[in-house]
Image 1 (cartoon, rainbow, N blue to C red):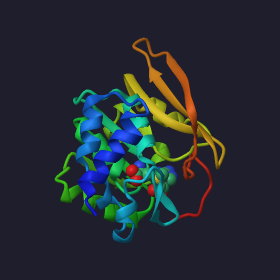
Image 2: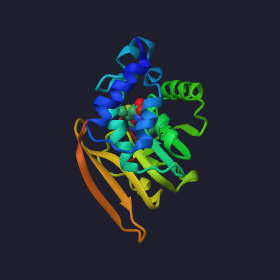
Image 3: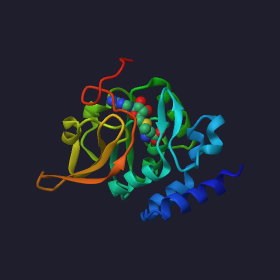
Image 4: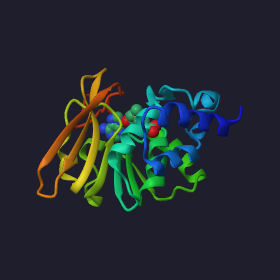
Amino acid sequence: MNFDISRKRMVESQIIARGIKDRRLIEAMLKVPRHIFVEEAMATQAYNDNPLPIGEKQTISQPYMVALMTELLELKGTEKVLEIGTGSGYQAAILASLADRVYTIERIRSLVLRARKALDILGLFNVNIKIADGTVGWKEDAPFDAIIVTAGSPDIPLELIDQLAVGGRMVIPVGGQIEQTLLRITKEKDGAIVREELTGCRFVKLIGKYGWEGENL
Ligand code: SAM
């Protein structure tokens, strides 16, 4: 299988054809080899138009959802970005290609180890990963110019709003355990919070202090 051809097709048919316009994002998706973020047995499915299992009952998100959420952050290259839900590390790799520095939090240790390995293979050393409950954010390194939550939350964790820089943007799926609405929260220059509802979506649960209840790890 020629992964370069599959990736180009994915970007044309799933990303550009659906209206993603950010040129830097399109370049990053053409460049980052998504297949190294999934198990070897799944590599041939890595460019399909759907999420895929990555073990531990978790998923790597659909390519279009990665693109849509990233475009909403409006990254220019100078930002410090916080991601909650490292999962495979693919979203972090896209962010690392578009921003100055990425902080990403994952609660499952085995996923962190695999994600770190993939990011290192690509030389993406501007990504800091922490094993923790991301619903409380990453206080020591706040504020963040952009925050992306890649698991479904019952509500917007207030700590994350506190850790969003003035002028910053956060994207987060909020709603039930199965279906959510993708929201963008903007912290305006005067500190006002603007909330936009973008589309319906389905993410695995955000589990933690300000998320859903789940097994302790
Ligand atoms: N962004 C990921 C990628 O590119 O592969 C996909 C993330 S997956 C849909 C959601 C991830 O959020 C899972 O790996 C899950 O373990 C993680 N997660 C859930 N609750 C969390 C929390 N409170 N803190 C950090 N990670 C969490």
